[in-house]
Amino acid sequence: MTNNEGSEFEMTLTELKNAIETSLKFERNPDNINVVISTALPYATYCQRPCEDVRYAGMGFDWEAGQFRIEPKEKLMAVKHDVPQMVMEYRNNYHCPKCEHMLSGKRKNTDIRFCSRCGQAVKWE
Image (cartoon, rainbow, N blue to C red; front, side):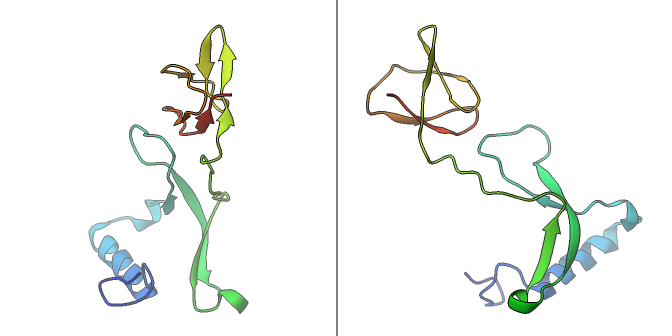
């Protein structure tokens, strides 16, 4: 992928520097600004987007040389929701095996669906 300047990267260090300098022009007290990494969830959220605090930012070394690395305070992990899990049956209702949300719709033997609450892929037995 290329950015507006033709680079193969999504964001270059120069673009990050320009974004920070632009932000500092409008901020009177930068010491009170928390730096975070936006994260994604497989479901809609209310209010602000979920995020994680930044622990460190700096140039990589060895095999990470040539990269500006941003380290989150907590590890960010990819969540896999594409592996279907068997639906749980409870009192003639069907529930998500991950969050136990009641699933709507009629049971179909070969149907693979997704939980509307957490996004987990589910399948009927």
